Length: 328
Image 1: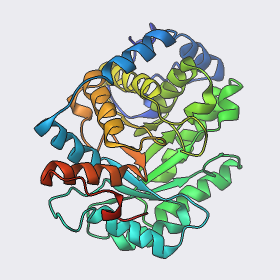
Image 2: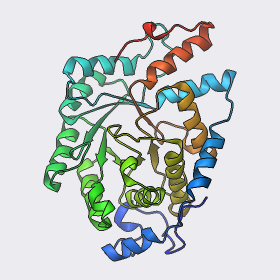
Image 3: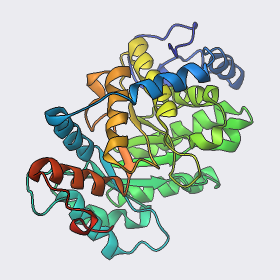
Image 4: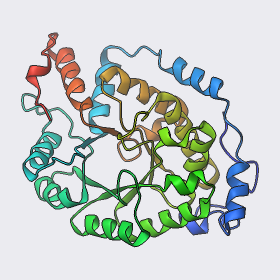
């Protein structure tokens, strides 16, 4: 199910953003023509393909490998109004050493927090190799003036964030003001410096698969390092179908430009079985190059505990149960 537009042909790889498809992003009307020129999504076909891949059986050594890989891809997340420095430090300790009874357990990819907790997370994770991810741009609604959003990003980066998770202006996108969304992503990217940028679409609010495809291309054209399904704060978050669609988009984008973009499903992925299904989607759709935490992440909080319990079961033959892992 190709996701590339029939025209214009993308240029050779150079810099992300403005140097790619300069003609398509020159004006609001040009960008609209390009995005609406993308092939329409067949919802029945997309969902059938996602469901079919979800039936793959992964056992024994392959399952053990998949569980360790999934652990290494988690952005261990706390995004609550009641977050405290103590809670963030505890989460950071768990990210570095998820299972104190087994030091072979992989570390998670990152700890994801609000900007005011980024400094605490950075201090707790110093030297560990675990990244600090911070949401920004008036997460989760994104309802703020651009200067406020950019200040949010600057504060997070100054506090030590290695990665920024921004939300797009869904109101602008849904009303067809694509250039506004594009320029906002460009501005946020510029404030990130060396921090990697994850662009959150909130797919549950985009209503259609066609909109998810358009948002994926819009985010990639504007310089996203990752495209991310959702905030985890609405009723519909990551699903196999919307993640499959985004994986197709990054695959086709690299095919045409040489630029590789990551994918992060977030919200609603709670079990090892679910995580492994998503890894199958990655392998069968984008390919092995994305089976690495530099290019694929899970936005999750409860997923890690189930992965740890399943890992212990494979190792010992016994199911320890939730009392044997920490409650985040």
